[in-house]
Amino acid sequence: MQREAEKYIVRFPDGMRDRLRQQAKANRRSMNSEIVHHLDRALAAENENGPAATAIAPSLNTTNP
Image (cartoon, rainbow, N blue to C red; front, side, top):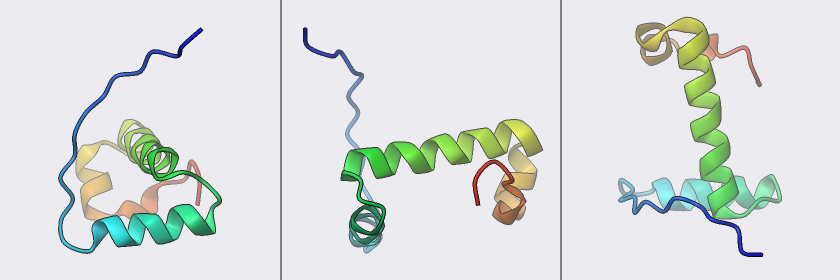
């Protein structure tokens, strides 16, 4: 059985792909898993602290350091 997933093309700012690749390698994850991980953390922080707090002080994210 094949897993169905939504697909979305993302254009990264200069240098971001390399940073993500390095983090993915350090965390032993695929690029896709690393991107999903960061999106999940950002959304959780926004839900917990509100969008303005997350934008102003991302360190307020207490879900995962």
